[in-house]
Image (cartoon, rainbow, N blue to C red; front, side, top):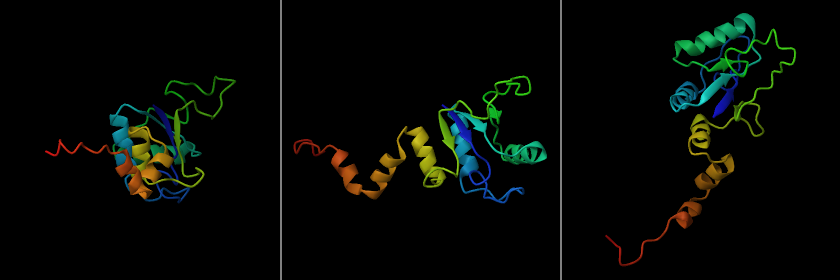
Length: 143
């Protein structure tokens, strides 16, 4: 899966143009997704030195991106007359989602388990859903 990830407000707290503190579990979750062979693209409004600082902040924590503000690393945006900042990705992780940014554990479950946020919230908020999904063993298979 190719996933676009915002920086400010998503990986770190909003302190733009400074870099805020890491949002808990953001880097470790993104590293796990990379290890699972997902392609992560850093997608941010940062440019120039501010972008370089954000990329270096991630690198210092062992987080490398497949591409930065483009669909693939070799894409030459200066020579592409039809270049658009809209990436061709499967999923966007951004604090500007309707409803805000879920916690990183929930984000991981959505991607890893291929579930919707609604499914995860239903499971967490309604324990009866889990028990209804579990099959009861026949009385003769007690052990």
